[in-house]
Length: 135
Image 1 (cartoon, rainbow, N blue to C red):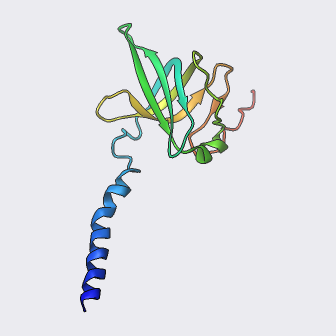
Image 2 (image 1 turned 90 degrees about the vertical axis):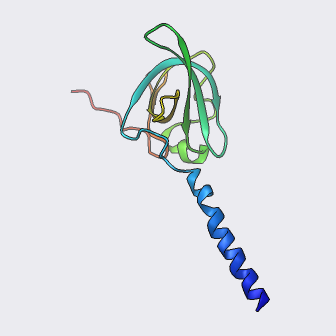
């Protein structure tokens, strides 16, 4: 009887502690549907599990430079979309479209990236965009 109570207590504790783990992958912090286009200089590219991060310096309309952090999924998820360990190099100029944080902090989720050579990389987890035929 005592063992059954301990098992039930362990199950209840596990269920009670689980929601914080689910919250890690929540999209609630992002302003989904809103897109911000960032043109800036690559400061750092972290190609690592569980998420990859791109830090870029973006000059605002007021002339001040703001460091943005753009997040994406793990390397295995973004690889099909064209992202590699050496995709971004320090000092390169890139254009990154993100879904920004709702609270206005300079943080966003990568939706698309245009590299210096004009190559466009798609949303993490999606295949690279198909080339558009010339008219």
